[in-house]
Length: 197
Length: 197
Image (cartoon, rainbow over all chains, first blue to last red):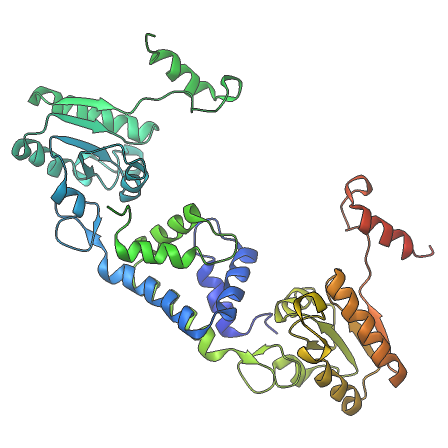
């Protein structure tokens, strides 16, 4: 006999698909749903459907939007573009309330090992924006890994000749952490990118 | 400006209602949903709705079921009843494939501090089963806390005079753990419930 009746087993299985969720956690989530009032469970289900139905990509920057063009592209300084890999990176940067420019989401980074070349990500669209929007600076905010580094190098070589400044987010020791516990690669980068006081 | 557009913010909010899920984890879950094919997201939403629509409580034991009476009550030895607090405890015990009897889910334990008395949980239903089903043993498997202990004592006092054996799950040092790291209360119980070799 199955331990869980079919509808519960099904829900546990769905929750198990979420990142980092094992059987045990999925069970706890499923019990929580069972304990919810019906209206609350329906709101949950509607939110899942809603996100799939309403969310699309901004035709300019590639970020999540409900409309043709996202709120950031409509409202903000177009002379500085921050280039990121994924829409989720936009959310991470927006949280700082620091950056006042616009974004460009590549939807991937160059990764020959996985067969992702420059034409497979939104680089062409970025170049088009540079021409039309009077862009002064492109800040490359790809992840500090092999693929993110390669993409940054590629973009710099492509964009600098156009007279646009290309910068990249600084690498170094995370604020609040200790030198002793900083990994070797990061510590090396911190040396290479040291600043004069 | 909000960091997340409304449908995404809504879904993050829903995921935040799950036990132990903070804003960051809820975001990761929401991104996963956004990345899913529409059909998969719909299956997820349907599983949530399905569990609310199909799952009810067994009229005999109070466990989850899709029918009037659960599969365990229909098929198994009725002479031994294992009494638990919640349906989730049934799943935890069933996983062992060890217990061959039936269950009785109290849907709570006696807890005067929270205003839960014997009449607020399914004790009356348990007594009715004892009379009709020829029960030989009641195993009380409530949690080893104040409320679970009080409920076990109460049940023992009520049921023993009926000529039914009442037992309780053993407390003691968890298998595989070390005496040094066992908490005082558990270690004390392990002494009190020591067995002859």
